[in-house]
Amino acid sequence: MADKPTEGLDAITARINSLMNKGASPAASKDAAGSEASAANGGDADKAKEGEVEGASAAEPSAPEGKGLDSTLVESSHDVKVTLADQQADPNSPLFSVKSFEQLGLAPELLKGIYSMKYQKPSKIQERALPLLLQNPPRNMIGQSQSGTGKTAAFVLTMLSRVDFAINKPQAIALAPSRELARQIMDVVREMGKFTPVKTAYAIPDGIKRGEKVDAHIIVGTPGKSFDLIKNRSIDTSQIKVFVLDEADNMLDQQSLGEQSIRVKNTMPKSCQLVLFSATFPDVVREFAARLAPSANEIRLKQEELSVDLIRQFYMDCNSEEHKRDGDKGETDSELRACEFGNAQQRRETADRIAQKMTAEGHKVDSLHGKLETADRDKTIDAFREGKSKVLISTNVIARGIDIQQVTLVINYDMPLTQGGVPDSETYLHRIGRTGRFGRKGVSINFVHDKKSWEHMHTVETDLKCQITRVQTDDLEAMESTIKQALKG
Image 1: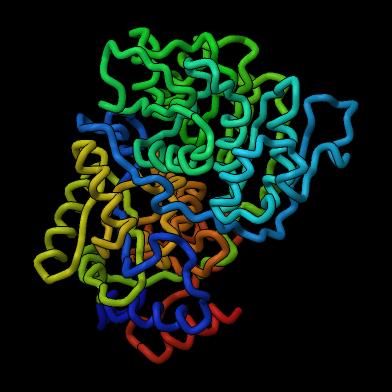
Image 2: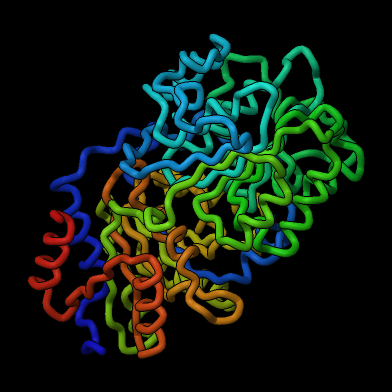
């Protein structure tokens, strides 16, 4: 391995930021100002139990309408493969592809909502997915799409399109694996539906009081809480027309979330349209999803295209765990934002410890993990979105699906591992996907400190057919040259 780094991550991130700012276009979102580094440090234990994912108790989250949303989409060159449930139909027919939202026959109020979000035309995934999602009679869909391509907007538009606003009963439910992702989906529902009379409700801890009868048209929540509310007859599912599982691979790959999602689904009418969306679908989950959503249309990217092309990936040699922590101390006065991830249950304590250490050194830092009270989790993620905190140290709670567009740096404290200790390439893909959002450039850095950690990184590199370049931390000029060359390439 390399010699001990002579400089902490503060100067490194500052140099990366200055390099990226030379070629990057300014951010276009409503909340784009003054936010910097998101660091996440956590393990698979956080995504194994919904009790940790959902947290304990808090008031219903209040997310200002449209806050933190970015409707800029990736102009992806990736080919989208469509497999129709009707084997006699031609998936390349113009009936199954659109180039404008007007072609979808949407209500004027929905078109107005779409354009108010600055969408100009459907993304590549939306071009193919929306005609299939909105067709009548409704058909199930299994969808695969990379981050930042508009999949959330696609299934939200489907839910809004199916709702009969004259009937004050739940008609669409969307489930997500975490409270944070559920709140983000609800932001899109409220923003896109703001010109309609849609009523919404959260099925997350303290989002709906026990015994309260829900008359909201669209419900967004997490599996365990949703099933609890259905079981206690707060939510009537007899009129549900659309049921969405977002990050479905994550949900179905976990015993608790998968079982709870199935229980929710089993309370719904057989005519309910089932939609499963995720950035990745391992074969075992794909097979299960096919059983859960029979006769489904399928839309996906080719396996070799499941990568984040705009993210330049590097690794740093560290001789010890302590040198890793030294590298966490970032010069957060720049506009760089970073996400740092790690493994093992004790990383929750590590996240808090690093946050305390960096705060004592004058940085604006928060930590986020599943053991926090839900009110604190909402407050933490909102502060980071708004730029009130410059560094967010988190567990895998935010590894999937969370869109914070100003994140330009992802740091992997450790490479992600499965419960069996095998390198988890798909989780790595989700982790680094917190940067490079919506077609903007991003950087990821992996901390490597021994032979085993290097082998883990090499396995991920091989699985994803990507290149992870060493950062010469003991030679600043060489480091800067390496990063410049990679960003130009």
